[in-house]
Length: 308
Ligand code: HEM
Image 1: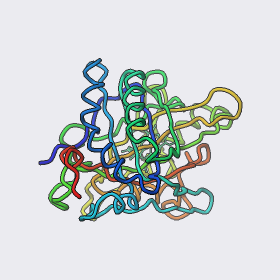
Image 2 (image 1 turned 120 degrees about the vertical axis):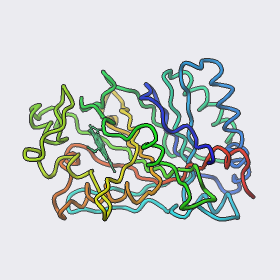
Image 3 (image 1 turned 135 degrees about the vertical axis):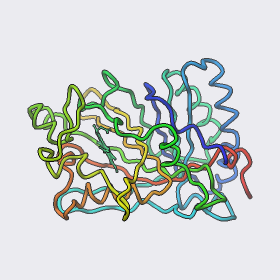
Image 4 (image 1 turned 60 degrees about the horizontal axis):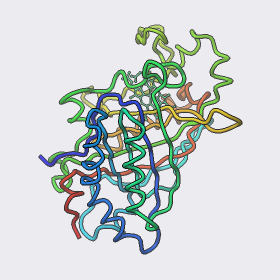
């Protein structure tokens, strides 16, 4: 089994999300930087091993063909815009993703800065978001996020490509979306109304019984199954981010890993189009998706020795 990048970690306190496009002619420089990623991580990690530094690199669909002549991951595709009656999940530019995370922001900053220098003028930054965990490791809405993520072997099974695409074993598909939350309208809800939005209690984080959980609650729409009734899972590592002054954006940076991007895609369809159609996720009345990309995060073995 090829070694996956370090995707599964405990809930770390900080993250930097860098979304980049590759400039014309920048392909070779990008390849060199990706090949150097493991070494850069080792260098910075050794300065504070307790901070659990990780940096996952993802490559977008169009960028893949610019970087590699050979085969591509079977399910790699661009993010598709989803237009519901009321809410839209837009597709926005992005060739490369760096998901850097650690318990210390200086570690994230350091490796991000070194990699940015390595990329040099081969890339342009679409967006750089610095995320942090809010009190008690919660989302800015005050709810605990990530509870129902699979763990251990189940998590590995959910996110890593295996025999279904042998050339890309150990890789994972990544979907990201930045959400901007309207906190004036969110905080105008009572705690009970907020709990109905998620389908869980706020303080104790307990799931509502099915007979009281609204059908448009976030977690009611995000549980999906295959034809045999097995739950299809993803691993989410969302982070709060935000400006505190003026009208600057604040909200949640959504990031999900899966061995099949269509699992996350099905969840997004249920959220934005609704299930049944029109019964969309109530959370979307308070938070707006402003970006959307998909990537493939290849195994460490792949990155260390890139194919031509
Ligand atoms: C559950 C927050 C976007 C998929 C949850 C929970 C919270 C939450 C608080 C309940 C606790 C937990 O199990 O983690 C948010 C916020 C979002 C967001 C603040 C954006 C602003 C998304 C998106 C997807 C998604 C875009 C999928 C495409 C899920 C799934 C669960 C979940 C699969 C677990 C359902 C279960 O098994 O009970 N989310 N989420 N979330 N969310 Fe989200």
